[in-house]
Length: 515
Picture 1 (cartoon, rainbow, N blue to C red):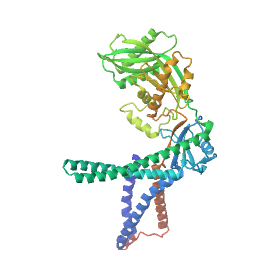
Picture 2 (picture 1 turned 180 degrees about the horizontal axis):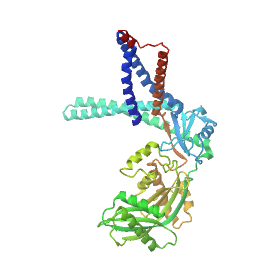
Picture 3 (picture 1 turned 90 degrees about the vertical axis):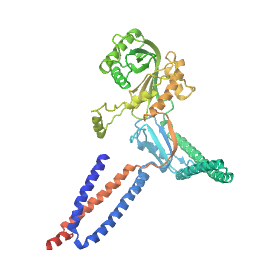
């Protein structure tokens, strides 16, 4: 946008330089005033049409191509590559009822688009945002918006009146204070009326959205994902944590680089975290223990690997020949989860490549797996899961989370739900599965929230339902400006043709030559 914006400014400047001298070529000197008046009028008229046309064009574009205003629900289907035409056909072939009153609904008012939290537009997908055009809900939403606009100044006015009444009361003017309190009471009565009406509208819109969600679930039926299917795999293992004393405070960015190198060297590496000691600092490394592995040998190899990684990135982090602070075993869980979005950036635009090239001169360019790394960072907690690893799953649109689950990790209070039952079934063969299940279930809930903050949605049958206003694609306004530019180019070509045929003369040039 910056490049095109600057280019338009340069072209506009050059156009002005060329345009003004040409005026004197085509217009007689005694007609310059008449020309200027007409040109000003045409310019203002063109500006009026162009600027107001942008708004009308954006509105028309939204009405034709964007989801309509009304009820909206996001659902997740079992198939990932299901096409938009198939989803829309299934929805519009069913009978619908209006969310209010139960009157028959028009199937043509139902629209569906593939949805991803990253904003990626696609004709296929796993999650679908289904809309139902509802003018009545649109009117209710408009009424709510108007009430909110009315309510804001009333709240400020009421506060001002009560402050004024308090000041008058302190100044021994009870009558004046009483009048201000009465005025504030009237404002408060209107505020309460508006607040009640807004709550009533919210409840109505919520009920309609839930009604529409139920219809969508009924129509799609077996196509919908069943709750619990998003958990593709779960396993419990043992993790070995080795703590090493550090000479200085570890730099988090350096630890991240060391961790990347260690994970390339050791596939079972979980995490590398700083350790705060009473008399200094340290580093704790965690790795998955294979069944029957020699714990002492694994700890020694892990220490050597950490020291080698630090030798090239933080040579003064560890003292030579330092003995480890200790080794502990902790249970670790690995979850394989289905997601809506691709966790790894698979497409890098040409503009992003240029930006990354510039960033590479000063620092590392953003990694394609940065959302996974950020999700793991969000899941780290001293009392919950301080050692976490997030990877891309073997299948498309899946993630694998590995975390060390200490005894201090929180436990879920509800286990008899679809996700809890699926986890119980997957962990049934693991030792201590019964004891670890509440912590695993709580970790799943935390993972769902942590991934959502990075626009990575863990799948579930019904994501949300609510009233959705019409969305406007303001970038479509550039199409209008493009059409206006085409009209200008067409006029220029026609003008040149007329001049070539002798229908247009350079009156200013002819007048100058004659004199």
